[in-house]
Image (tube, rainbow, N blue to C red; front, side):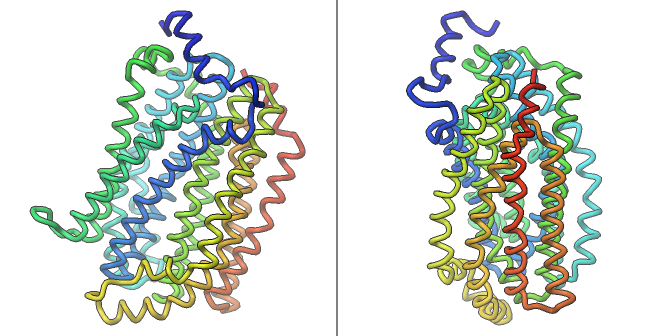
Length: 475
């Protein structure tokens, strides 16, 4: 049973958009997006603290965590991207009033995550092969393999953790995700400090300690989400303890709709990781400057992924409810929220790039070589951070339109467009840096300028209204 009629009316009242405002306005977006922005910020801070602590050991350790972490994301992102479409499927059923199916869809995502784990482990040798041909310094390579191996063998946790928030983001209860991410972040930071530097009975593990801290933090936040999911309230309204069986029809739908998202995210992250490897292959100074810039880009970008998830959730909900106008309105509201956020980030990047760079300065106990590399990289890093302001504003357009089109079910088009955009950028960087021998910071300008043309394509797709045919196809 899903609860009495009175209880059903109560939850509908708590989740219903108030009559004095239109569905899809800024307040509607903020209710879903703000907790997701914060939760993704907490996830970002987990990774940022890893690299900040490791930077005190030296540039090689910091650069290794960026390279290994990026490769880990590349190899997991196909699976996580495919499974993340669960958010749209849950939102569509929730919007259509079919709440009994929300829990069933979510459990298919959990089962699919577990099935994917052995396939993820089989990709570990591929990561080692890429590191071998990357051309990084030997000391960085040792740290990079260590960090990568631990994260990959913790893949069962990362895959299930990716699925866990999909139910809550689909029904718009994103505060739960935010709280779990916050606790996971605190656990991660504490474990990082204890295991990287060593304290009391804890050994000094360096790079390995950072990886273990990430795995432990992810495990804690995942457990929290499942405790709430199977709790009394969600069981009452969604029968979460009853919908535990395989559902082949829903699993096929998840694979059909999710595979394009998985392929899209894999191609995107592969292109982005190759971009990082190209910068790292230019030398330790260029690698350090790029690492500092991409670390701050991650701080700015990952919270926007929370806004993308919110856009997918809201558009999916309104598509499920056959409210195309509200879906359009929520997309434009998301753009306004994203630009307000990017304005704050842009001010920091333009006026405080030196301060942001110096946060990653090695500790005075680091080697003279490490300190010299950082000092040489500092001017280049400042230049690249300032120019990244344009990059951040462009990213807002991309995440909002990608999220909206994905929520409407237009996943194949998004996959193709994103893949073309990201690989064109990477190719442009390769030609500029390795054939034309353009300095790294000027090659970064070329990347940003090429990237800046992409939103026009996504804007055209949304304005064309071709995604509206999916409204008629749903349910």
